[in-house]
Each structure stands twice: as C-alpha cells, then as structure tokens.
Image (cartoon, rainbow, N blue to C red; front, side, top):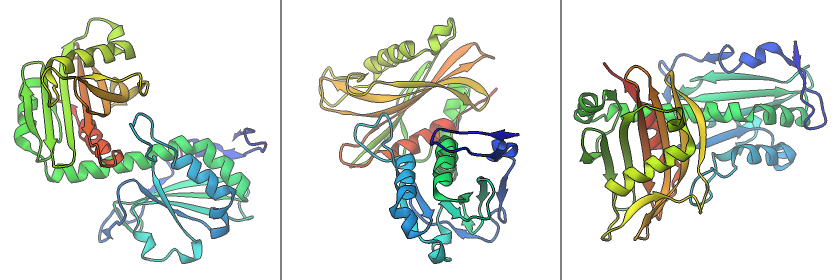
Length: 337
C-alpha cells in the first residue's frame, strides 16, 4: 500500500507502516540508563543538515513549518526556536540536545521515511530522523507530517515540564483538590490558593516579573452545548467576572475576542472527551492582559463538566514557555474516586 501526495507537484511513495511510525516505529536508545542529562532550553530544536541545505529551500521550509508564530499569544513567538549544525559537525556536544530533527538526504533511499528515537545520547531526549532521496522529497514529506512531528516534540516538552513539576509537587494542594473536586493534579511548590470554594478555585504563583494562574470550576452536565466554544467563553467570563480581579477597584477579567479570536478543538484528555480552547484575556477597568488555555472535560461518571483553565500575566517576558508550564500542570489532571 502506498500514499500519494501531489501537493508540491511530486508523488510521495510511503510504505503503509509509516502511518504507524509515530508509535510502532518509535524506539528508545538505552531507556535513559546511565545517560547524561540532555541540554538545551525548553522549546529549542536542533536541526541537523548541511549548511547549503539550511541556507536553501529546505532550511526555509523547516523554519516555516516549525518556527511559525504560535496562535493565541499577544505577541509573536515561534512554536520552536531552531538552530542548525552540519551533519559532519554533529558531535558529542550537539548529540546531548533535547530535541533533534536529523535530515539525511541520500540517493540510496527509494522512498522517504521517518523514525523516532528517544534517549539515544542523553535523557530526556527526542530525535526525529527524516530520510529522503533529495531535498524536494524531504520538504514535501516533512510538510505532510509536520503536524505530527510538531505534536511529538510538544508532547516531549510537556512531559519534561511534568517530570520537573512532580519532583516539586505540593502534595497538600493535591490533597485538597482530591477532597473538594475529586481530581488529582501535579501542582508544584510556589502556588497558593487565592480563592477556594465548593465549585471554584484559583491557584496562583506570583513573581516580581510574571504570574501564573490556574482556575478550576465544576458544573453539572445538562446539555451538549456546554462543550461548544460560545458556552465555554461565556462560562469563563462569568467565573472570572465574579472571582478574578485586577489591581484597580471594580476591575475584572474577560476574554478579549476582538484582539485575537479564540480557538477551540476537540481533545482526548487522558481518555475523557474534552474541548481545548485558547485565547487572550484582558482586564475591564485595568491595563492588564495575557494568554490563556482552557480544557473543558466531560466527567461522565459524575455527570459534570470540569474546567481547567491556565492563564499568564507576563508583560515584559516571553510567554511561550511560561504558558506551556501551566498547560503541563493542567494536563497532569486525573480523576479520583
């Protein structure tokens, strides 16, 4: 069986098991045993290809695919920050990078292929290898799979955040969340309850330069419309108007859909049906704003909607990684008995 993709004016022949390459063909180096810690900052990706390829159409395409602006941030920030090293210079120093996209162009390849390797030279580490006969074939192949490749690296980033957060988990907060809302969440030290009642809580962490916040609210599930974008935004505005205030009197938070429209999509949240919504918030009556990410989950067993909402206020800092840290906390959530 083959797949054909004529989007770039060529035909790609891809053997059928490449459809499963992101799971079945994923391999692990030495399971992280005895490996050095990986290097590189969150969101960084090292591209291994020749200098001429990087300066040409291949490099332009990779930067277009993986350095495009993130949606739903108040300022332009790339999905990943890319750097490049030539294949012949890819030595032990570079092999420790956390995220590696390795491009191998050689006429010996009769069809393009992709392999995924974890923890080969360092831990935690993710390596995506792309092999193709020529540059145009590699470009078209990566274009076809760019969303899956992006998802792989993003998932790896989230898991790294969660690993660090687990080591710093505030178990007292988790205990209270289990008792009140029947959920478990890996909330690291530094967060405190700003507000907590039977159906709503606000956890926040404040520094001199930025603040991270988590909202949790629950409501009985009565209608399928509760998992649509208009309802999710309306409910968020109701909760934040009641509970989330700015520094000035009578100020409160709402979603700012005039600045950037919100985006909603269905999401498999640890086996639960959910809707993920992203957007921008602002303060009515105050000069504040930022990004948020919201997961509305259907808890069928208890017939309720659980909303997990993370938002960020960082007026002078880059926001991508700070928001991903909050999202990692949200994605650690599990139901408890």
